[in-house]
Image (tube, rainbow, N blue to C red; front, side, top):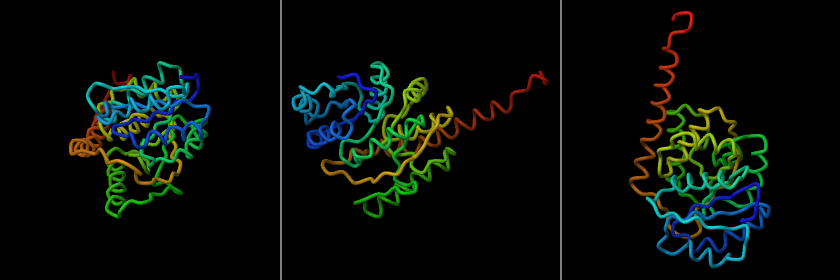
Length: 251
């Protein structure tokens, strides 16, 4: 890998069809960044194929995961990689072109003044394309559900298109992130908010995946339902503990 300030991480599982198109696009749009594919032991040999295609590209690398699968685990490994290799910021995105590479410069620009930048489908100016009405409703409901239970003032806490400054990555890795699936996105947003990191949402155009199939399982859905309650209840217990402590004058 070259020594760039920005690392773009792309978790993959059976994304062989998308990688040959996505990686050149990322290197074109953000030529001064490095790209890391984090492959979750894909049966379709995504990692092998990517390494073969871009063997001579110094800005590209593959991180192979052989442990338990999970989107959250892949993100966490990417965060550690970025910190270990001295990057000052990290962009995370999906491999299926639902996140537009052309929006990355906007996220990076916003990270100059904020610790966490969320590419938001639901803030003013954001939009969703090619989704049926049912999926739009469920996605909006999920975000309102998260906000109501956790108290976060975010329009799109479930968005996976983000940019983190190094300060934010260090903060997140100090915390114990328990989520393994898509709820990892909610938990990291919650922990960033709880640590009083500067968070901003910028509008993006979200487009349904071009190739392949969604990897959402029943286990992931169940975790997504439970996680906001776990976070919200833990936060309320902490508040009660802090406010119930006697002041020094009372001791």
